[in-house]
Every structure is written in structure tokens, then in C-alpha cells.
Length: 108
Image 1 (tube, rainbow, N blue to C red):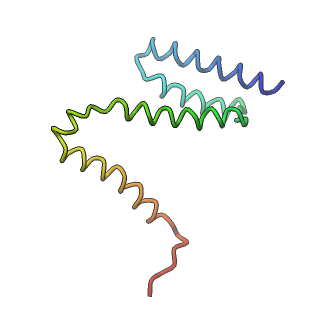
Image 2: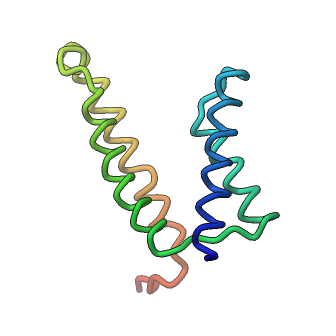
Image 3: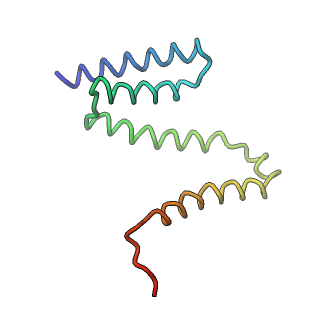
């Protein structure tokens, strides 16, 4: 029964977020994130295994859709800039993650 209440509350929050995004002109994803944080912290909403599955599946779909929106002709025109942005977008978090690790052994 608890799963049904969680689903109902999440559905209501998603509906509110979509209506608010139309009225405010803000991305629905941003409003959903804010409402999700609020629901988790103030309403005590938590995930369930089926929500975790849907989130994992949706992340794969969103990654695919983001790749589908790439304009190949524009990338060919601006290959140098595309490679720089892509390389920095990968390397910066990677190096930052490595630098933040305190448990790496010191070199002697």
C-alpha cells in the first residue's frame, strides 16, 4: 500500500511541475528536481526498487536522446571546437575525481 501512496505523490508532483514549467517558462526538469528534493527532505518520500529501475532505464533513454540531437553536419564544420569541448567535458571531472581521492598512496 505504501508503494501506491509514493506513486500517487510522485505523480502529483510531476503534474504540478509540468504545469508550473508552462506558466513560469522554466524547464520542467529543473522544477522536477526542486520538487523531488523538497519531497525527499520534507515529505520523507523515498525510492522503491521499481522507481530505481525506472530511473536507471530513463537515464539510458535520455543519454540516447541527447546523442540523437547532435547535428553531424555542424560537428564536422566545427570539429576542432567539438573535440575541445568534448575532451574537456570528460577530462575535467575525471581529473577532479582523481584529485579528490585522499586514499591514494603517496609517491616516494
